[in-house]
Image 1 (cartoon, one colour):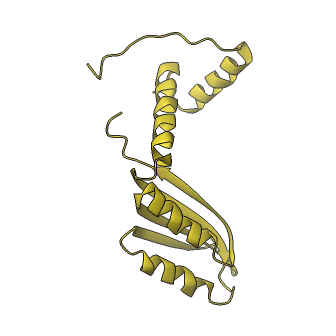
Image 2 (cartoon, helix red, strand yellow; image 1 turned 180 degrees about the vertical axis):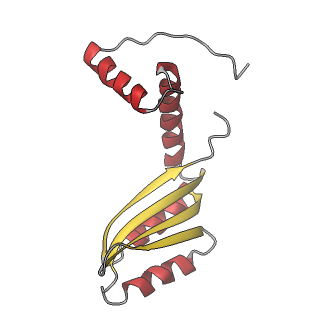
Image 3 (cartoon, rainbow, N blue to C red; image 1 turned 45 degrees about the vertical axis):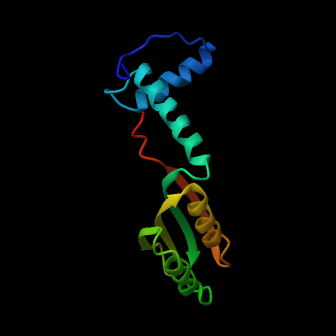
Length: 140
């Protein structure tokens, strides 16, 4: 029953439909309007789930920083070690002679992951960062 397709119609302004069709085209030949609407619905459902504090999530935290900033790398490493049960992996990239990018993969409840990300993002010397959360979406 869960895999049975149900048809419904959607009304939207023509200019929005034109832009939507451009999105469908960018997603490739295997995508059509229906599939892109399903993708958008899944994205919205997962985003709402990730807002729940006790839902298990996986997140990527991407940060940019100047590695010359005092003991910043050591402080970032310390935070990650303090949360070793939630830090799954990290990747460090040298962008130029001064700047680095780090991608940290986190796992835990939404609250736990957001608190760790906030601690890292709030570390003096981190220039910019963004947390992206997801769930497995097994029920979708």
